[in-house]
Length: 206
Length: 206
DNA sequence: CCTACCGATCGGTAGG
DNA sequence: CCTACCGATCGGTAGG
Image (cartoon, rainbow over all chains, first blue to last red; front, side, top):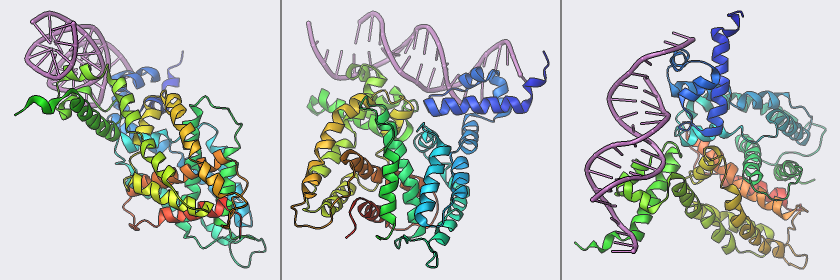
């Protein structure tokens, strides 16, 4: 049995994976360093050789597993020569990359409530500028010279983007709430309707 | 000094108030029964005379302080003889009753993440039917006989309501995120724009 | 027989 | 990368 398969890098990634799973399922104070160590197959002492402490481990998980890493490429890959086509394609790529499980926001909730959002400035300081730059194709598609119909209504781009991201927040969060209710299970006509409402909301009428 | 001012009812309400504040600010596992007892001015033993245990205390807080108690009256009081007027009035009453502080959702996040949403069925089983009944004025205002203009587009009422509630979720949650960022502080043009986008989204064009 | 409440301590676990 | 520990605090309960 070679000793190679337990390199420091592999161990670190195993720790981060298990820590991510536990933090999203049980929160910050509900997750113990001992349990992370046990599930990752390392001793408690060795866990502290890889991370200075519990909060350092949490922030590493928060940054490395943040949905932004999936959101940004999805937005940048969006294509379409009208605002409507662009928004529809971006929405489709977002749901494809985020998947159907609406628990990817849990880390942010844990950060907001249990850590009092103290890492938000650093997190959004690096994320917001890059997300804003992904708005440029939308402004270009909205140019008056564009052949495609359906101009954007005069809405400040940051607010429009916030509403677009908020569209997914609201969809996933109501989904989290409703998925716990034993109500009738509709397949998922919800998001498409949300996108339609958003599109009618931001586009000039024909 | 009369002994009357420490009735059992008063003590219970003091416990619930402090527990609500702590659970909202520090989460479930980050809040100890000892601290709740200390801040409420009761002994730990007496705290257990009022509540069977920590989870029983949390669920009581979850139900008695749920924003639904402010949301439902606000929706029921909404007035207007067109869908647009009704939605605008409902939105104004909602922000007025929920206030500017966007932390009223924290208890739901704690329940979803740390308690795994195990109380959601009971919570929404009592809430959803009442919320749905608050949709009736909107359907009435949308009647073809109504003199006011601006018919609703054909959207299933539950989805329309979900999008309306989601509008506030997305506004408050992006507000929670952005309020931590030292960016430029706009007064709050956000929510009005969100309402405009929603209205254009759900109404037939003129 | 009830309530409200005490000081002390239970078996385990927290981060380090 | 491990065992062996620390000061303190956890949720909950004892007798009175």
